[in-house]
Length: 117
Figure 1 (cartoon, rainbow, N blue to C red):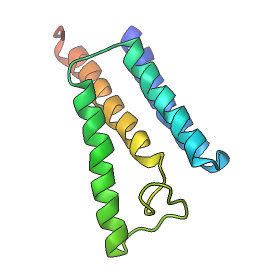
Figure 2: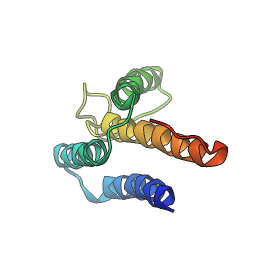
Figure 3: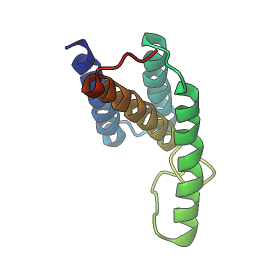
């Protein structure tokens, strides 16, 4: 039961972060809120490879979105990061990557009844 509460925490966290996008128009404030979400997740429980997944989400989205914007596939109205995308977007994806990793391991642990350290 405890694991399902943690899974819900990550899912609700992502939904809240997405819901804040249209209501918070200041990209710097929204970025600060997203950093707080990431810090809360790291403080609540530190797991192996957390920083790796945060870095993959953060830098991967910067590279991917840069490519998409430069090829004309995507456009952003907010462009506070390098003039191409919102500053908060890599932080959102970093939290999503971290959440996906943690949810996956919680589900695997329950499914195969193994203890992860």
